Length: 332
Image (cartoon, rainbow, N blue to C red; front, side, top):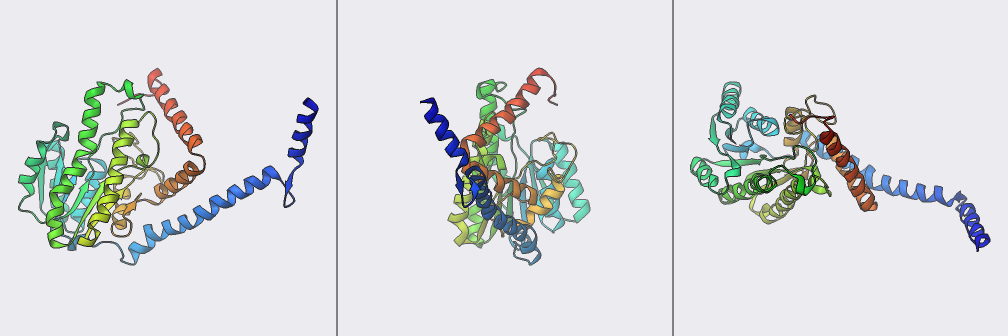
């Protein structure tokens, strides 16, 4: 029996395909498959991120309506969107829970760009009651653009049952990541449909595209944002409403705890300058060149090697969890 196994092993090692050792041939075929998929994707990425906006194929937000709404507008991506919208001449409704921060952002936008602002202070973790207040504040405004940006992130990778104050934390995350996208879209779609124009950008996350062990609730909420956005985009495209699912990777914000911007993790301002140009070009966009290339590469790997990719993700987040647990890194 041992002799038979050795003979088979020797035969397999010596097997060739088109003159190549079989293992090299398998590697070559896999590489070609990846290149056939990825190279066109990279070219499409360059077109959608740079060329199409330069040719004017993206949406003209000024034509959508006089006012824009931005949630989570006191910091990070939300603040950058508010400033960019003010820069192009839109009045901006700023929504977040910190009045002092919102007032500073509003003051800066008004002084820099000569537009109007309106501050609405709400804490989305308070539940459904906050939406009546928002509706009252915007009822007389022509809302042409809605940026659903507010969100919660894990303080650090955790097992599902390790979340601090778990029941409350899960509730707060769902109330913050799921409800605003849903309820505010319902609030503005009727007037947008009546005018047959409008833009809604729902800020999800590239992590919502993949399996996310140790950030499971966050990933689930962002997957909801992505699916809702794609579905609504199809429902309302015939009524002139552009609905975009935005899937950023890491951005240098307080929430991500990345303090130094880079090509991998741009500043909020740099990210938004890129992302805003994709509105009307892509209904599902990462908004930024490097992030799109990462998503496409990861999608390819997860398609061909789903179990391997999921376990690799688990290893990365497990290592981060262990560093936090042992105190080798600190949570601010």
